[in-house]
Image (cartoon, rainbow, N blue to C red; front, top):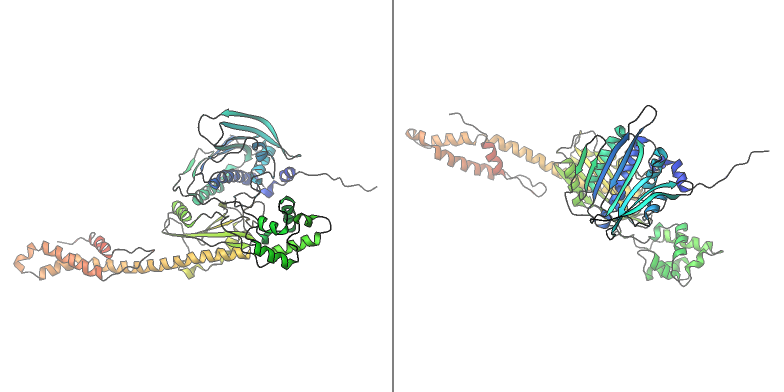
Length: 547
């Protein structure tokens, strides 16, 4: 007798518990970083997405030191002042994998609501401790709390403890406590760099991070300007596959195919819908639900293929996206790097496979930026810093392929390049969300954005070099003005009055300053022009004449 295979169903929670590396929890170092990242990004989505200026408090505390046979244990807590979670949703929001408020077409930091559950599963598997959640909505009179575990076999929350307290102040938001195994010593550089990059891209947020070393990293809010929150979008026809189409037809309340086209998709009006249906040979008055009935698979396939390939649809709308904006990118770069020169750009919206996206870029040059053999690359996707897999990212491919010497930038270069991609669907390479795929439309936009700023930088460097040459000439000429003035003063009066020529010296100095200043014209750099007379006077102020 041959042995027979045993079959059983595996829940999604069990799948991610057994394949935790897919969500970024491959080891104790990465897990500590990933947990903080997931909690912080949830907090930011709960605040700035709803036009709330974020206040984020992050604490990492060592509970048990590492030994030879087991890693250290840490308590991670993150608190925000966001919208809070409805009390009846807390258990499922934190205890059920693939249960989330993010399953709409909208730009969000997270894609599936998976990250926080992966962190809870990792915590549960390494320490056995429940997650502790405290939350309150602005309109609520109470603060609610839950302690829970995830039933891995059933993918259901198991509530260990729950309750509510009367709210005595106007606090609203969420605070989450997790206990997990981690390696702070190795994770520290990445975690601190992550917090810095979050502060850079969110200068409107107040962030406090308390480390196990009793260090406190404080990033105060430096602006109250906040990006426009993203709005929920209808799907664009070019991004629809046959399974999505079947789901849309199942849930639609429209009675005709014409209504279905105009009501369920973006950018499709009645005239466009009629032209499309006519080109596909489909009856506009057909009930859309008939397409998913038995025997109509060919018609469904025709509609699905046509939606993806029809050239008459307008591009996806960009108002559903929430770019950071040039001003905030420049503010963030200035705060973190204190550069000599900085500039940012937000490109016009483009689309790939029916998904709108906007590329933003920023370049900081000189100042306190340490020179290096290649630019420092800061990568962001939907306002999330990407720290791992840099060389796998399309942004790295673009930046490393640019000949920076064309832009008057020599090695070692004091240069920082920031790239941000905002989209309703970021083309990540993997579930870990650490690098972007080489989508041709995306690559082209990143290259165009960086090169446009680089051309401005080249102009700045060229003008700055011209100014340096002129400044050297001014210094060379100006330092002789006091001596020339004294000599002219002596030659212009009788010998018997040589001791009383101080006023004449001053008058001649002033005249020579005016003459030299009028002969010099500094180039305008970023709309500003140096005052030659001011430079001449600063040189003369340091000249001492021998008696």
